[in-house]
Image 1: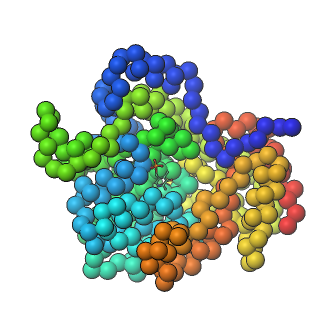
Image 2: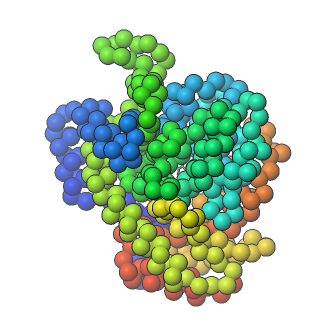
Image 3: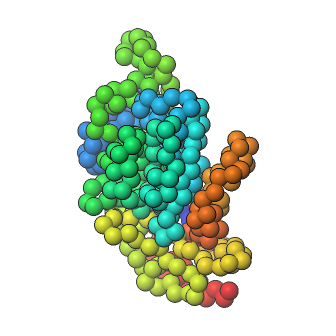
Amino acid sequence: MRDFIPIAKPVIGDEEIAAVEDVLRSGMLTQGESVRKFEDAFSSYIGTKNCIAVSNGTTALDLALKALGLQAGDEVITPAFTFIATANCALYQGQKPVFADVDPKTFNIDPEDLKERITTRTRAVIGVHLYGQPFDLKAVQQICEDHSLALIEDCAQAHGAEFEGRKVGSFGTGCFSFYPTKNMTTGEGGTITTDDDALAARLRLLRNHGDTGKYNHVMLGYNYRMTNIQGAIGLVQLRRLEDFNARRIKNAEFLTGHISVDGLTTPFRASGVRHVYNQYVVRVEDDLHAKRERLMEYLQAKGIGAAVHYPRPVYEQPLYRELGYDNVRCPISEEVSRRVLSLPVHPSLRQEDLEYIAETVNSFEA
Ligand SMILES: *Cc1c(COP(=O)(O)O)cnc(C)c1O
């Protein structure tokens, strides 16, 4: 029997282990020198003046909305087809997530539909660079400027992705996650990137109980700090990120070059972007919506960890049903959530794994 090929796998080596050991031996466990070094390295990688490290990607999004000054009742537009955290961060402080539909090929927010969802109460847009592919930043940035809306980029799946030669996270307020399935990891962890110094100062205060130092608390803040343990892992992982991404891209290109089955569409890459393939997602064309499930089960039975990201639009989740989102319609999000299937693309795949994945997919008989 061959080993099961998981859908995601963090790459942790001796360097990360040594870095953690150093922190543990130093006794300086929480936010300190390692976190500061990680923030400096991360902001110079992304190309922003500031980087604020936090406890995870969800708290990054939550803090970004708080620091941007959004109020209860304000509307925040997010794509309907994303991980639930993108929308939930608006709920945390009594704002209203409003869902926009996505493009059927890139699975990213559709700028035309986004425009339709703007009301007098809209204050911010959270775009998501889903699966590692940048959304149309040019169009979305223009819409935000025209309507005076804050732009937040959910970069949780897109460390190192580029739009027209510039890293994502440097266009709006960037929010990153370092959960183990992402392009780089710190176990749990997150960062916010921004060129706005005043915003960065508010973020730093909000992250740590509004403390300006020596127990002087000037605002209601939180404990959203990153630990030195995470910061030390992040420093090593960031050095390895370009290699991880290059391998993801190479793996994706191999799969696209070798998968060929009727009714199955390999990922579309928009022009002018660097897609970093946090997920490699194919579309299974099928009007009855049963073939995707059959293909997933077939692959799993053959030892390939195929998975669905995500099985329904956020507004169809029980939580959102309960909140009264029954009448929301984003037809493309509904369609793609029933057709997408993620195949393993992570950096530890060997050539024989890639060949096996392509062959097995090709052997599927609908
Ligand atoms: C992972 C992820 C998040 C949340 O990050 P956590 O670190 O798990 O809190 C938010 N948005 C998207 C699109 C994600 O993939």
